[in-house]
Image (cartoon, rainbow, N blue to C red):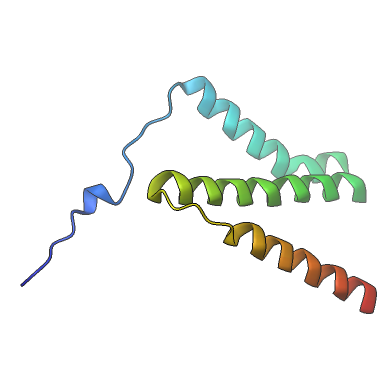
Length: 93
């Protein structure tokens, strides 16, 4: 018995609602990526890195919940374990 997978169902065909939102999102991402180089200093780099980390965490949770319907605390747990590990490494080293 062969099972065929409908490949078109695996990829979302949703389009963004407006071009303004797409341009705004691209501008925000570019600003966050180029911000540390334009502003300089450790504080700007730290803030941009934290924003990008939280954005990736939120986007992955949104993809998991939105497309699969699975509610998972694993993202938060892995983020917390990583933060705890970095904290221990900073104190010990």
